[in-house]
Amino acid sequence: MTLPLTQTLENRTSDGGEPLESPNQAERRRVLVVDDFDDAREMYAEYLEFVGFQVEVARNGVEAVEKAQGVLPDIILMDLSLPVMDGWEATRRLKQDQRTRDIPVMALSGHVLAGNAEQARQAGADEFIAKPCLPQDLEDRIRRMLKPSKSKSRP
Image (cartoon, rainbow, N blue to C red; front, side, top):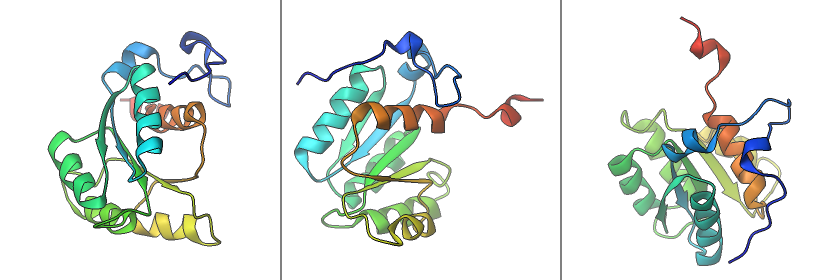
C-alpha cells in the first residue's frame, strides 16, 4: 500500500506551529488500533508503523480490552461499532480498570450522528474522530494527544 506523504516528519508541525514529536520519541509510543473492518485497521496500522509507532491491533471490543490490559499502549484508537463487545462498552471497561483508565482513547466512528461525540466522551473517550479520516490527520491528532503538556513538565 502506498500512502502519500506531503511533509517530512522533521518538518511537521501542529496547528500552533510547534514541532510535533520527533520520530525517535514516537518509536517508544505504542498504539492499539481497534477496528473490525480489515482494510481500515490495516491501513491505520501500516501507516502508524511507517511513521515510527509500535502498533498492536484488535478486531473487537473483547480483544481490545485484553490487549490493552496486556500491553498497556500509550493510546487506543477505538472504533465504536464492533462485534462481540462494541467500542462504547470496551471504552467504559478500560476507563473503569485501574491499569488502563489513564490511557487516552480516541473514539472513531463512521456513524456521525448528533450527540455521538458527547456519548463517546461520557463512555470515557478522550477524543472523537469521524471516519473516514486520513491517516496523516489521525497521526497528527495522536501526536498532539501524546505530547506532554507544558504544565506537566514543570517541577
